[in-house]
Length: 171
Image (cartoon, rainbow, N blue to C red; front, side, top):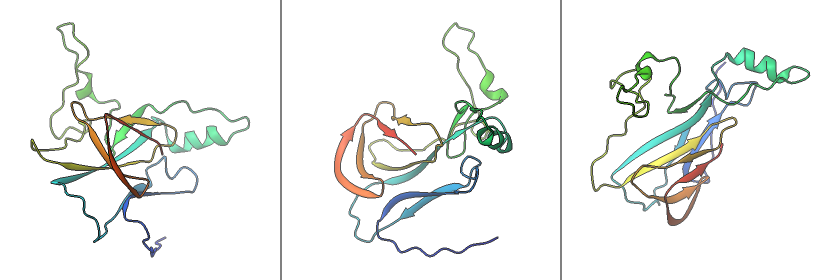
């Protein structure tokens, strides 16, 4: 069916929606909602949305059957973490091993299905990262290598800006 929702916006900021029936959220019924305010005074050169999620490598039906059985059968930890719906699972491009004895190295071509999303940035610019986690179980820690982050909003509320090396993100 199709449903039309009307929202009364009382808080500008980064939000997300997700399904509440059965395993809808775990099967991908979620997305970001960006509410903009004409009163916002933040200055930045670009913006990226990062939607974080966890993923089990078994069907939603199998997961639901295990979780609703008596006694409940634990489905285990998620096998992948996704950023904007992209992650790694059974991907031949991710199976490359460096023969020099170094750590395992994955190589990707730009449009490979397994390739992580690349955020194109320019030096000496300020970018806003809008981050939402739709994880069912995983709590995550996010950092940008070689950079600090300035937190300006949390849970749809603007905050006095503060600088961190990383942030913990919960669903």
